[in-house]
Structure formats: structure tokens, C-alpha cells
Length: 400
Image 1: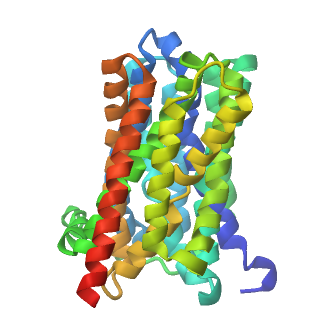
Image 2: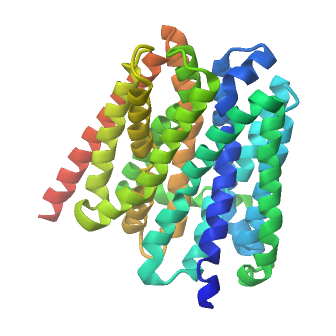
Image 3: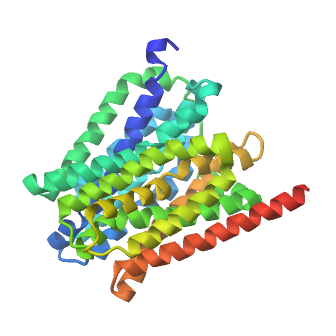
């Protein structure tokens, strides 16, 4: 590949990842306004993310075969258009179209990571692959920054529906821009590859058969719970419990996502250089637990700078763990089955994305405060850290 174009796959996959992440978080970033417009509790808007990730589970399991048949770029383009369609449906101000829109957004979100990984694995030199994958993974928090800054600010001027439509338009433009790359990067597609429903559960079966992968997958379920508690309810918590204005809350939300951007690269570097992935995951579980506890203890009298700092650390850990996790999955997977293992573990991760907001909302509703939800997150993460430490010791003893 010519030097001028060697970074093209990373740039386009990063842009696509950021846009689908912004699509998932666009509605939660203005959840109070959406709830007010629909005349429902803001807790129900938090379930938007659960519905989206439920659809993403199915889409991610099917994405491997679809990518082999149609190519990474084509699958990504279709995903972007599905996200745009879902966002348009969300603006129709109906609870049913909001749920349907969430489903379309999830169907678009699910295939992106497997499709982009397929492309980057083919086009990235071996000595650069860890860095490239880490940078690509920053697309998720970058999309969160985009949603947190763009949508709440625009809704003040043009209303929340038009603000969300702007994100939909950006998704369409990204799909259109990727078309120029399709011929070059989808040259390996196999149009004779058959799509079969029977292949969907094989990645999950692989994970369940191997204890190290099973533990990682279950840990990712808990980590995803923490990540979605932050991304789905941070703005609502800041406005309802801490008395922040929606624009200010959106700015703090963007700061937390910025922490995730830096964390995804930094934790990967620390893991490779000093700790190793398994110990790094333990450290991140402890950081997430402490950050969730600190978030629950915030009050309206706490300076905004302190609130932003707490959520920055929360974002750095709860959003920044994915790259380290994926590298450990690849290491623990059977030979030549890292891709299948990744798809299987991501299905469990997405299940945490599905159930996390619902569990958080139920706890918050039951206790009448979002603080209770963050306390529950802190407790579950502390237990997860203990399990990871004990499993690491058991593995060390068995090797000895």
C-alpha cells in the first residue's frame, strides 16, 4: 500500500465507529427533553440503549458471514444507513417509533467492530497492529464526545428532533464517503458465501467451552453494565440529582467520553509495557468501582470541576477497558479462532449493554434515586475484581 494511503483503513474505520457510537448515544444525550416530549419517565428513555444493544447482539453474530460475503466497507455502509434510519424514526415523537428506532440503530451498531477488525487485520503491518486497533477503538468514546457536545447544544437552537436528524445526516455522509474505498478494500469478498441461521450460535458455544474465555466474557458483561450506566444515565443524573443545566451536563458527559478516548490508548500501552492484560483488567475493575462510588456520593454543592474530574476518571476506566479486554480474548482464544472468540464474547458484552440500563433503572426507580444505581454498579464491579484476582491466582498455581 502506498505511504499516502497506509492510514486510510484506520481513518475510515475510526470515522465509521465514531458515527455509529454517536447514533447510539444521541437520544440518551437529550433524554430529559425526549421524555418531556413523549410524556414519559426519563427512565424509559434510558431503555433506548437496552433495545439498541439487544438488536446489536443478533447483528454482531451474523456480521462475520455477512462481512465475508459483501466486504467490510459494504457492511459498514449498510450499518451507517440503518443507524440513520433508526434516528429518523426516533424523531417521530412516539414511544413505539422510539423503540423501533432503537432497534434499527442497534442493527447498525452490531456489525461495525467485526467488520472493521476484518479490514484492519488484512491491511495493518504486524508491528503496528496493537496501536492501530487501540486507536480504532477510540471511535466509541469519540462518538460519545460528538453526541454530548453536538446534540444538547443544537437542541437549544433547533429542538431535539432536528439535533438528532443532524447525527443521522452525518451517518449518511459517512456512508457516502466510504463508497470511494469499496472497490479497493472489499476485493476479498466472497459472493458465494452462504448466510445461514445455524452459524449464529457457534461463536457463543466456543466461548462457553473454554473457561478462560468464559470468565472474560462474564467480566465484560459487568464492565458493559458499568459503561452503559455511565453513558445512558450520566446526563439524567447530572440534571435531576445535581441540578446541572442540560448543556452543562452534556459538556460534562463529553468530558467523561474524552476520558474514554485517552483510556483506550493509555491502558493498552500500560498493559503491553508493564502489567499484562489480566492484571490491567483487575486494576480497571477497581477503578470503575471506585469511580461509580464517587459518582454516587456527588451532590449539587460539589464544584463543577470536581464533578467533571470524577466523571473523567469514570469514563477513562468504564469506557477505556475494551482494547485491553479484546487483546486478552485474542490471547486466550484457541489457535486461529480469535475472530470467532471475539464475536462470541462480544455477544455476552452486548447482553450486558442490554440488561445494564434496565437493571440500573430498576434499582434507581426502586430507591427513588440514581445514586442507588451507581452504588449497585460499584458493588458489582468490586465483586468482579475479586473474582478476576482469584482466577489469576488459581491459574498461576496450576501453571506451577
